[in-house]
Length: 268
Image 1 (cartoon, rainbow, N blue to C red):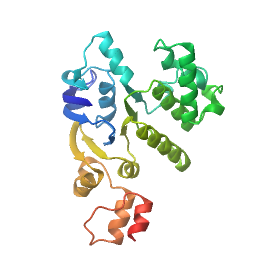
Image 2: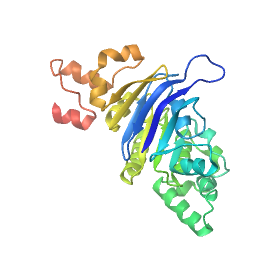
Image 3: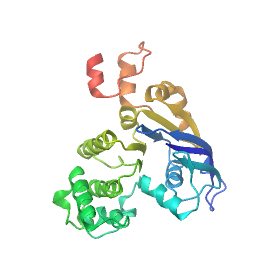
């Protein structure tokens, strides 16, 4: 689906590469988590993948077609790839929830009836109907993130990139977010999440990528990646809590640990 080949990028105020010869392919319908400490290149990768910044070298492909500076190509690219920033205030641009969620729809030259239909569908899917006329500045952080995600998904992109969406969410907000992700995945949206939350990544993802100092250093299933536990300290990463608990309870068991509490209960 999305293919990045030999991507390199260095910010103008730095001599250190933010991304250094990164190549990867995101497959359709796959749930991918990207891990890495601060400065590893996760956010830069998303900005490049969304077409917001241009790599100094390397090529991006969407369904085999390269990203170019042509306006129609960029429009098609951004129509099919959505990006939700870590800080929702960076992309909330309207006064109320309904106005913000419909902002992208209004730029697609749709009829008023179609905009209204899509808006109603999206507000319902993200449980925002009761907040439709609420001013953005009255919302909590969790609500703002839900609105930002709804605004991106209103235009129905094929691929959704989420930058640190679980940061600062309490347990209840995280559960709501997981339900939204599951619903999007079931509807056919391909999801890529950059996160520091190892427990979330281990439980949720089909595939985990690890970035370190601008390079892609690990790529595999959650079990495959975390089996290489000795490498994690060198990458400034830890291990999922359930993995640590399982290895404490069953130190002689060399199989991967349970990925969630339900699996843990079944295996104890």
